[in-house]
Length: 193
Image: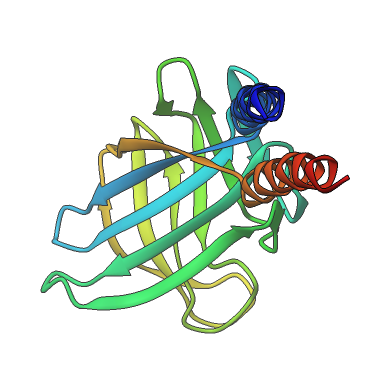
């Protein structure tokens, strides 16, 4: 009987150690960003990437599969803080916007350079935040699906990044649970035999 408890304890300890290692291998890290225009329009957003595989500088542009970003969404608000639009610029590692531009330094946790998020799929009325961080950012709205847009607001290129969180990837959590269940199942099976 004592031998069975020893095996259960060893299996539990091994499962816990492997679970921690698996969970650490796939960590999605998320950041929030905020932009405030000179006349009161604003934008808030969130982006995420796998912190275990991301390089120091993440640079993304255009439509198609991204190199590192897993998601990026942005919401726009009028001067009375009423929601205008929420758009997913990157979903499951894929951008649909040919205008998409994003640069992030993972070591300093700052956005830099060219920035273009929001619309970009050619739908009339889509809004997008674009420009050069630290120089000039503007909130624009598409007018004709071709090349005409109107400026809703602008600022001097200031945008803030905050609220870092790490969340285990869903596949890692499922893997940990499955591994633990296999360990307990094998112990119980041996006990019955």
